[in-house]
Image (tube, rainbow over all chains, first blue to last red; front, side):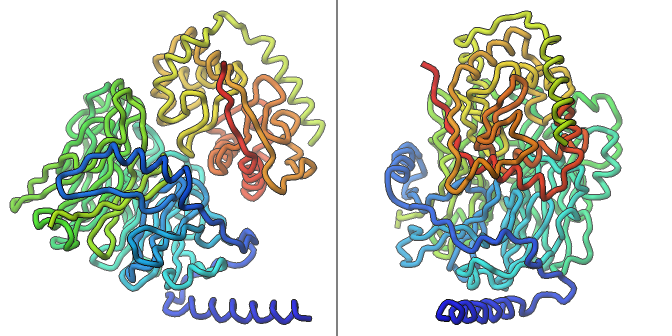
Length: 418
Length: 194
């Protein structure tokens, strides 16, 4: 009887939660129904101390930064990819290329996370790489072929059975037969226009001709945007190979994004890209260009049928520029205001590996952008990776987090030069 | 289903017999070549990223078939097609010799009862995901999404295999996911070669 009572109480509580969580969700969006869940109602917690954490800290001793900055282990987070910091600063959500999303909480505010557990364990995720927040606290998670939204996630994440709604239902983001693994790690962001922007990498090294018409229509090899009630989907960006990092300039509102360029053309070409987009519909060159103004072998000599916008910054070939964020905090020295921090994941097929570092890009008054290394040391002299940075996000105190999917960790970079 | 499996298996053995081994692999030469594989697959074949399979302790014939298929274009992947393009038969044999020299160790995860292993898979892939025949990969400890992606590739025809294509053709998304969850839950380690 006692059992029965407590289950009824739980049921009532859960029902109340679910109702609360549904507030303000656009009417036309479907709530994910129960039969699509895993039935798992217990969290998986990740141990934060111990030998594993000590090993990561030892690697961080090798990382160098400009004077006055320091880097510390913030959290052990397996397979950590892109991050979304809650607008209230309570929790950071971290995506993976597996089937989990992690919630990372610093309860005692000592700037080290004390709790890492899986988010919404009752839901079955597929490559939930890209979490992003709207300013009003809706969490969006862009998966391989679905986009979910979670109202007030920062408050409801403590329940394993959190209400989820389909912004884009499974199978509607891209045609199912275009699903791949490597280039289906999505990122998303809410723009100054209130729309959600979602990157859609194309699944090839160089997109073949017979796919181009289909991809153009869907925005595969592009960035799409839509209203946050799921309506008004349109292709915002064309000619992308595989973008896994984007952010909006805090003053101009322009979308900047990174792109990973063509492999197999040599160690030093083509360059990677940091792009600046000034209006909808611009084309950035793939598949006619392999990166910068380097033509792909597959389309060599063919007339380029579109006007192509060249990158704002050409980055070192194969370094794999991924996540990025504009800096708007008050902690770092003034010249970092509105600079871009971005992560280079590191090369996989270059004779001498490059990357595995955090870069900073300064943009001058005329809009010229220059990128330089900011934090490096994860790549050893004999070419082994101690870590591979993926994304950068800013905490409310103005420090930045860096995720690493090799070590499975978040790092916090702070400034104490004052 | 069972009959189809047996028929299909017959085909595998025939196919293997007709696959000529012209070159002998040298594991030490393979270890050197594996420096270009280690960022993703690990030097001993324990994967460093979710998108790539563990290949340490794989059957040499399976590695050779896949690398040859990537090189010759029967199997396409945005990274592996680039990597394999320049590999000679000797290099492929050496890599297969190195990675197959490692010892795969699979342990069923907590709560996994072998009786619940996916019936259609165990004849070739084992209940614990260690291959029972030459031309099958180990599946133990691969990520859910890797197995999911491969089964769907067989289903759509992006990847073809005389046994796997007809099996995958009959599978629903939920069945694929369940198989992937089973093998992904197996703990997998690579015991380095001496």
